[in-house]
Image (cartoon, rainbow over all chains, first blue to last red; front, side, top):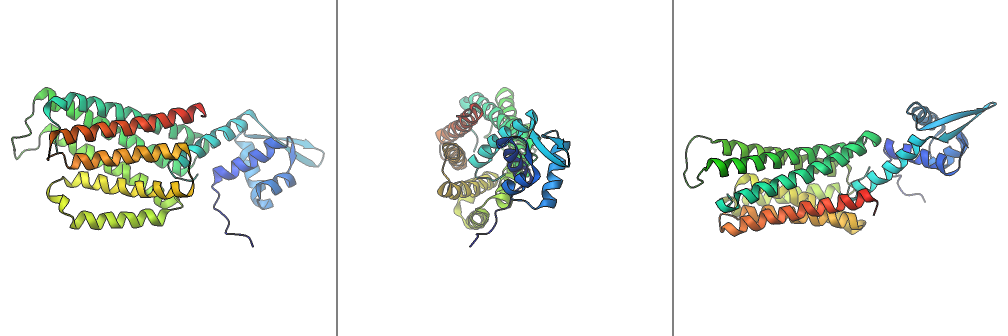
Length: 94
Length: 216
């Protein structure tokens, strides 16, 4: 049986999506969907926000879109990891 | 409650150093907030910015009392510049620690423990005999630090890392320092020991921050 789902902040969801995109190169939405554990609607919304923030870029391949992480996105993951550690040192979650 | 006169310049210097350390922590949290936009980081930024401001004001007040030569023995009805400085220091410090407690209560896994701890400390503060010998403001600071310390200890029992051990040690030292300062009317040296512990506590926090920045 699955335990109660832990609350994920927006920053953590962004980091999860970016990690999925960074680990496997140009990825399709279905791949991120599986890795980031999100519904299709929510993922579409977040992908759009990430693209607008310049953290990922979109490549159109015919009907299908693939996503790539940008330098800014890589930096975001690094900063998130640091801040996760920082907050954790204070016994706090981000 | 007040430091011995010979210690005033050192006290002012100690407070200035702790203010700078608190500012460094605030800047680190702000940098993270600018990237991640997380409320927890904003709370840490606000708490440490206010703490830094309070410590800076206290440092200036202590330097002022030393140079102006205010005597603590004389009791006047009017509020002196030093009184105003000390009051501002206490009020801002309490607000800063309240923000930290709020961050724990709203985000922390062990929120219920922290709140229970606060209630316990509150009851003790009201009924305890310490009120007769120590200023109320210092007691409030101690109560808030106890809440933070309880949350830290519970967190350590769940997840242990060198960083969280360092931060817990620093909070413990700061808490011990305020307890000592509360009892400083007993003996001058108690105040000196308290301020020294506070400085060591903040320097421990700085060491944790430096290791973290370097990425181990």
